[in-house]
Length: 290
Length: 269
Image 1: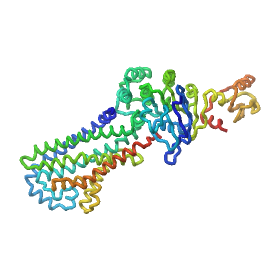
Image 2: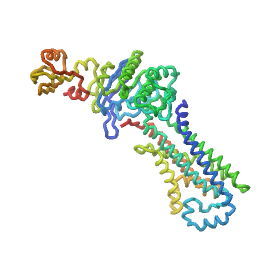
Image 3: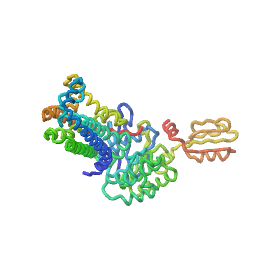
Image 4: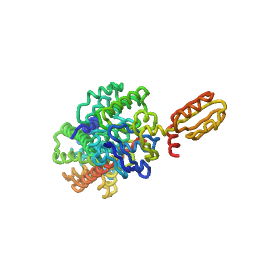
């Protein structure tokens, strides 16, 4: 069953483009990655699904219900972690979380303490005394507190240190294992690849690709940088090599295909230095759609 | 209906409401404390005032008020009370939804399983309760001032009640007009200048309408809709103007709901 169904969704802010004709589905129980550079329309899409803003045309359904007509009902089972978290400054963390919980049916005090302990969040502090990272933790607890069936995470890892990021990912995996569907927006390809089963790529307001993570990885480019004596453009005359630049004993290029072909080539050389890395998202976009 | 937003909003406004209440009550009592000396030299006072340019007296709504009578004196004081309450109600109106948007807590609230209508209902009820607290302070301190400082002079209770009970309707105007303006302008960066502008602006319009005999202005400003001098002189409301005042508030509120339910809550840029 599709938890999220988006069909030709379009949003203009006056004349400014938000998103145009975006269509995709998110299936029950999956972790759907939503990647694109800043300003591509990721937040716009999420805000439309949460009825923070309303579509110019097209429509979206969550849990099979139209988001414009059934917003409050849908949001009972949604957890949202915004990319920038802002809460009522004068409140204490515990009071804010209790206020948040008071919007849902049930008693969430036990879960509140479990989650806060897990995320190492001090409940007695005031919101305005918190660092950015700690505010983010409040956001995480707040988003998960009421055991939602669908989670919207909008660039959730910014501001979290690597240790906390890992704890957070573990938490999301646990929730997912309980059957929670996750919509994970990010501009960092690596974290999407680690967590998600399927991804949608959005660029300049339009969905340019929806595929499962494995096929994306197989068709994925690697960025290779080699320094070796006597290197030249001819050394890497292979299918799948693009944007080859070679000079002064170094070569730089993108490679798409079986990485063993490259390592075989390299093993025959006297290498001074080599890096094989993920291209940045921008670089992927530049090459993915040539 | 869940009362959690109502409670949260009420607590958020309570401190400000108490501050306003104490200030206005203090203003009323201090003002009343000079009444005895005012009244004992009443003849001199009224003579002195007769020498003032009539435009000045018009601007303060004092022309035709007998400053030696309790209600005449109270009529002048009432104008200052009105200005205070206009600023308070205006600031609640301007801030009601705009503060959440400029401090970016609107995302938190609106992504909860509540409708926009419910949010507005709760917020409006909360500030109305806070405005009523201030009214209560005005009512009690006015009665206390009269009891303490006017001795055995006669007070027409009916007129006094008319004056005091006009305040909630007067406040509703500034609350609803502030709110609708906050939804129509692109962004309210700071509430205070808007609230001062609306409050004083309306007062200045009312003063001008008195000086220049611009009758059209009295249609716009609640200071004319609830002109203390008119109420004291006629022992009645200027009914058409009061109805106009109510109509403006009602239309504003309807428009507020219409706009807020359709409003895009923009993200941080």
